[in-house]
Length: 127
Length: 127
DNA sequence: TGGGATAGTGACAATATTATCCATATGATT
DNA sequence: AATCATATGGATAATATTGTCACTATCCCA
Image (cartoon, rainbow over all chains, first blue to last red; front, top):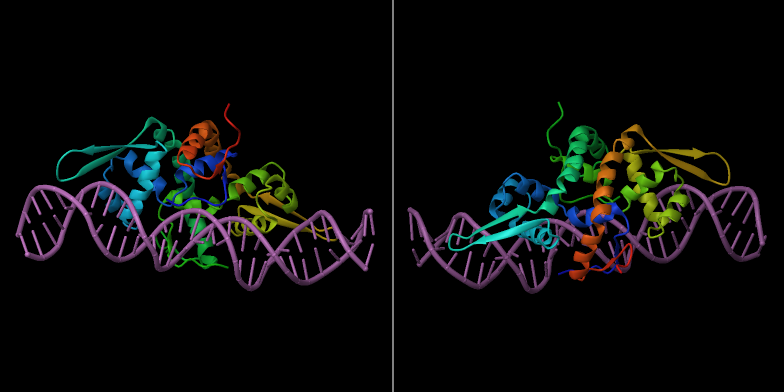
């Protein structure tokens, strides 16, 4: 596992939250699991842009931080289910606030990003 | 300016929000400005861990995304003030939600981070 | 026998972000 | 004349994060 060289300060609430959900796919994964998409392969189908490897990496961190629990079922075919813990559930309102703001302002942000000639793909083409 | 090679998808609300406030110091800077700490040098004093250079970089992005406005005053000594736009103000509730969650769970997150032997500095030492 | 589905991981490459160093400019202060 | 404060930005180094490839393992299906 990679170890930071520069210490991360957890002296500010936002930093603490970012420590937990700051990964590129973590909010998305939490979102999936809260909606009953709880097997790695299913999650990967829901987030096609992320590879299974990356999803596993992020899941294992969410597991460490006790945001999700993992249940492995015996036998084949292999079956594993991730579920939100009560602690993980407390994150939903935060993610929801972020989700709502982003949805509400996606057009504007996308337009600015385009003007900056950033390499973004839009959720839809403006007409 | 750096240009992404891999396109960033803005097809998910959280991604849009992260695009705007995802920088390491941006929420903190927005926090400062909303509390009347609105000159670069002042902000730097409030966030000693970040250099003035970095703060300026993040400010210029916040400016591009119309989260803040910038007012330059004539004459010397130089004086510049950044202020939240109405658009920027709409972010405060999001940042506040993140702040509250982080504050509420800082102890637990810090403990887990320590168990993982991550390189973190705690907001206080547990007794 | 040759895939394909399932889940998982080590090693490393690629990319992205942040930090550092140095430079400009101007006037006041020591 | 040197230093400091103010604000800003180029160039590059350092760091951190994410993605890719290859591999293990087991069973089912064609």
